[in-house]
Image (cartoon, rainbow, N blue to C red; front, top):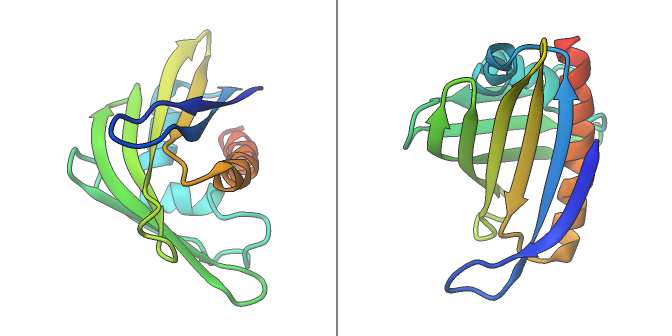
Length: 156
């Protein structure tokens, strides 16, 4: 897995941090795409290790302009929810969506998930940009790395 963290230019705003993660998954692109767009599937792999097992829930309307929401409850009882709007979808190839936590809706960022066939698997590239600050970028890098670890196990 390659990890790259860099600053990305955001027209109209100051330069904001971004990150890029790459992962080869042992599943075809259509199975990976479904894991991102089926609410029952994403609820199974997306919740972090610190969440109460089985508290993940999702609502997903996978179309341009459609919304998604994923929520879970942490072991200490704290409720977390993230959501956004799909800006671009190409089945089995590309997902582009806005991203904001319910606790900080003003800190909207942008996620791009690209899927490319790689033999009998998929090369996934996740690019998350327009973070509020470097601390948010660093936290999301840890979170996305753990989420992709869980996705890899889910697809195995």
